Image 1 (tube, rainbow, N blue to C red):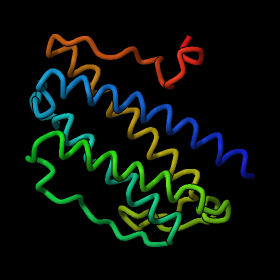
Image 2 (image 1 turned 180 degrees about the horizontal axis):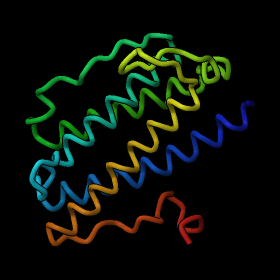
Image 3 (image 1 turned 45 degrees about the horizontal axis):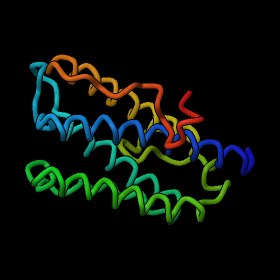
Length: 166
């Protein structure tokens, strides 16, 4: 593995996060961030809190070797959505700050999984899980929005540049 992979992954993660943020904003605009249109499923707010929590532990873990699993405060499950969205933005800003400090060695070193501690994974596997988990939950958001009669954002618009979006 080399630094090019790390740069590539960061670009993919950022592009995906911009899309996930657009889906979250569609829920905010629809006043439906706490709706559960499918019985037994979590609200999109709850899905976002999970995505942000995983990001927080992984960024801190890779940068500082601090792998404590700490749930985000329960208050973010019921606070005004603007406050929760600000939390997500602050976690992303912290990740942006930490990412350049993460060594390639940290990304290749096998370690116990932070959630269960019962198996070893490399950093690439952990980051793949984080991204796939985000994509999975974003897909749930698309279904939720459609069930609520709302048009979700185009799934292929991942960047801020209109040229790259075409």
